[in-house]
Every structure is written in C-alpha cells, then in structure tokens.
Amino acid sequence: MTVLASPRRTPGSTALTGTGDLARLAVRRDRIGLAASVYVITAAVAGTAWTFRKLYPTAAGRAALAATGGSNPALRFLYGRLSGSSLGSLTTWRYGIWAGIFAALVAIFVVIRHTRSDEEAGRLELVDAAAVGRQAALVAALATAAAPILVVSGLLCAVLPLVGLPAAGSAALALGIGCCGLAFTGITAVAAQLTTSARAARGIALGALGVAFVLRGVGDSAPQTGAAGPSWLSWVSPLAWIQLARPFAAERWWVLGLPLAVAASGTGLAFALADRRDLGAGLLPDRPGRATASAVLRDPFGLAWRLQRAALAGWAVGYAFLFAICGAAAKGIGQLFGTSTALEHEFTRLGGQAAITNAYLAALMLLAGLAAAGYAVSVILRLRTEETGGQAELVLATATGRIRWAFSHVVVAVAGSALLLAVAGVAAGLGYGVRIGSPGSEAATMAGAALAQLPPVVVLAGVAIAVFGLWPRACVPAAWTALGLVVAIDLFGQVLQLSHWIGDVSPFTHAPRLPGGPVAAAPLLWLCAVALAAGAAGLAGLRRRDIG
Image 1 (cartoon, one colour):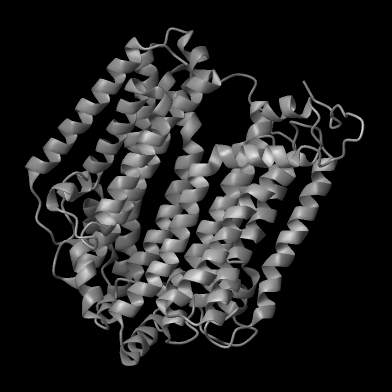
Image 2 (cartoon, rainbow, N blue to C red; image 1 turned 90 degrees about the vertical axis):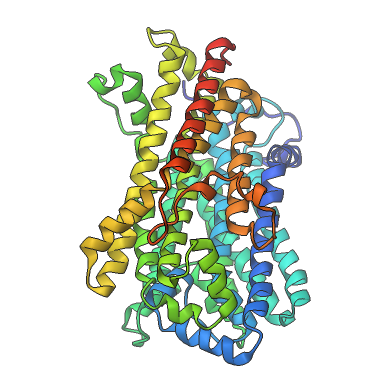
C-alpha cells in the first residue's frame, strides 16, 4: 500500500514539528555507537601524532620518513601526498584521509538508519501519524549524524595542541575531517531518497565513498605532471580536500569551503527530493523480480546465499583492491621502517618474525583475518535481524527446522570468510609479486598465509552463534564486543604491556604468522574444537528457546 506524502497535521504544526523529540530519540538509540565513534576517531588521530613524536624525535628522522613515504606510489595511494616533514604533516598524511573515511562512515550509517531504515520498517509511518512534520525525521537524522562529527572536530582542535602540534594546523586538520564527514552527510541524505531499500541506499552512499577514495588515490599516486595529468583527480574527491587544505604547511582555509558546499547542496537536494516522493517510496523505480522463484531458493542454504551474496561481493572487491595496494607497498617497506628502529620493532612484533618484509606481509594477513571475522559476525547476526523482523517465522513455518535455518547462515559465514581471506592473500601476493617479478609464486604463498587465519575467524563466528542461541537479546552487542576486544588485544596488546594470558584470549594469537613463521597443527586443531563447541552450544540453545 502506498502511503501519501502528506501526514496528518495539527493546528500550528510545521514541516519541522517534532524535530527535537526525534533527534533526542535518535541520539538515545545510538548513544553507545556515537560515543565510541567519537572516541575512536579522536584517539586515532591524537595517538598517531603522539606515536610519531616518540618514533621520530629528530627532524632528520622525520625528513627521511617523508622522503621515503612520498616516493612510494602505493603509500601515496593509501595515505595521500605529504606536504612537509613536520609532526603535523606526518600525522595528516598518515591518518587525515582515514579519519575522514571513518567520519563519512558514521554519517552514512546514522543517516540511513534514521531515515530509510526506519521508513522501510514502518516506524516513520507510525511517527508521521502523530503531530510530526514532514521533514522532521530527515532533519533529526542529519543533526544526529552531524553532532558526533562536530564533536570530533572540537576535540581534535583541543587535543592536538596538547601533544605538541601547532594550533592553526590542528584546527585545519580537525575542520577538514569534520567537513568531510558533513559532505557525506549530505550525500547520504540524497541516497536515502532514491531507493525503497535501506541496503540499496547504504550501497549507493558507500559506493560514493569508494569512488572518492579511488579518485583521490589515483590522483595522489600519479606524478605531478601539471593540470593535464591525472593528479588533478585529487581535487574531485572530498577525501583529498583534507590534505589539500595543507594543515601544518601554509594552510589553505578556502579549500574547506568545498566540502561545506557539497554538504549544503546535498542537504538541499535531499529536502527537495523528500517533498516529491511518497512515504515508503523511492525516486528510482524498483526492479521487478522474476515471476517464479529460482530453484536455489527452495533450500534454506540457497536463501542464505541469496541474502548475503551482494554483501560478500562488495567485501571481496574491497579486499582485492585494498590488499593489492598494500601488497605492492611491501617492496621497499624495509627502507621505510628503517627510518625508525622503534617502528621496525613494532611491525616485527605484529608480524611475529624478524624479516621485515615477511613481518609486514604477516601483519597484513592478520588484519585480513580480523576484518574477515567482522564479516563472519555480521552474517551470523543476520539471523537475529530475521528473527526480530518476522522473516524467520515465515521460513520456520515450512518444513525447515531451526538448526537447518541457522546452519545455512553459518555455512555462508565460514565459506565467505574463507573466500575473503583467499582474495586478500592472492591480491597481496600479486601486488608484491608483480613488483619483484614473481607474481605466481607469491600469490600462492600469500593465499596459504591468509587461509591460516581462518580457524580464529571461525572461533569468533562460533562465539556469535553461541550468544545468538543462548543470549538472543544481547547477542548483537555481545558479539561485536568480543570482536572489539580481540582487535584491541592483537593490535595494541603489547603496546599496552598486557600480560601474556590476556593475549592468549585472542584466537589470532594462536594462529601462525605467515609467510615466514612456524606452523603447528595443535593450536589450529584446538581453535577448530573451540569453534565447534561454541557453535554447537548456540544451536542447542536456539533449539530450546522461543523464537522472537
């Protein structure tokens, strides 16, 4: 049923009536995630500045790092161009763009959640039936997304000078990150008006972010050949504007007007589009489905694959692209790390071996495993989404049992994680192998190194199944908290000087660090046993408890 665009009005109401109440409700719903986002972005940027001060205490060391990093096209693709060798310039180079990406992700997920997701679920129809203005939900979503981004900018303006960076450059970097987030707030608001599906709208916004990253990467990695060369592509990307404002190096404040213009125009267009469509409808026409279902959908495993295949394809493309670039950066990585003995020690610790190139590649595979665990957890938690959304009841009303329904998603999670790890290994091996002249052998070696991370990934998937079956109401925060603790232990455990028994909590601690590290079968078998036990407990709990 199509719901008309004009909701019921009470005397004296306007298009923005109820905006404050909706905004407070949105903040309450997302308070934990918003607070965590503010902390992570602020701590990452400030921590990077502090780390560079410790790793490169002398101007000569910073100049060597800037010369080495600036001459590596793969690193320029990942991090952008350097505009100097000061601590501030190095901080902007290392984390400016990525902090902008994280701010954009906050904007994308918050805006879609409180606009298209609520509309798709029918919550906005209930809200609009009350004394709430037509544009109130969109304004509340934009305000909820903009608030943490502005808080991050304010905190960075205050914190970065405390770690020794100039105030003007700190403000330029902080405002660049914030303005980038606001630009994608406007872009996402437009995407939310285009489709009837939250997943499709989120895909459009994330696609725009991916295009911005690629354009910036191509422009930054290209040689400076003048206006006719590909370096001009950097000016097309909102992510590049953070560095093009030149924080800590003769700031160009006018560049910050570019993302603000994108934010303003996107917001204005979103309001105009919202007035032209019906509630629950999108401006892009829905693609008609097939008259008859595919034979694959007769089985719960086929249904699980159908639900997850688009997300898996997106993850695989991202894996191939990112790890190919990171693998290409492995050639010459020793020269880069050689500029700081402390940095070299940190990477050899993370990679678990002394050879710096192997340590770097092993660290990449660890990161691939942690990200694949995130994918596996998201697939498992789709079970809870289907349960609370009522789709699970429709499936279980057929001849499909609970265990078979849940196990179908487990199979997709494990098989998809294995595929992602294989893609990461092959891509990194090809990226590195092409630069050293042996792509075939390196691709095979790195594929094996990546798949060695599958057992710990399966352990975290087993934990997600266990909490879903035994503790369904808290399964989403519990599963993501477990993954977050593992990430913190593996990436920061030794830096924080945590005791070894805390490090042993992470399943990735027991996986081999390949290439170059030793391989033992016993830890891998124990990891598989733990995963099976956790998964079996979760499935047993699901069989006994009520659905919904």
